Length: 103
Image (cartoon, rainbow, N blue to C red):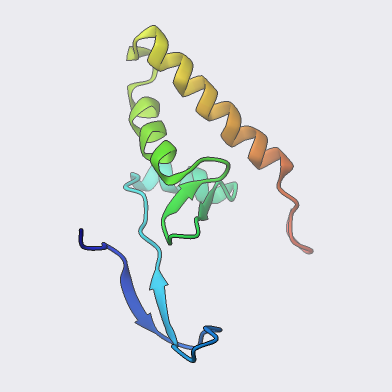
């Protein structure tokens, strides 16, 4: 399976001296969705270089996008999953310690 990650050259801290870095694979969000989640620092990058919602894995983030876009049109169990993922994301947001100088 071929990786969708792109390699960029630049300074790195690889102990082998390799300066190649992986560019994060971004979630497929609309401009409005991206602005909403970037505005509250709701996106992060996992260890594999995938962009994900804070508090969720990459796979859960993909699932959350589908459920979020369906909204109230989800079946009951899917809606409960949407709420569960949303609660985990919100809890991770609330637990986040802001960097000095950030609101």
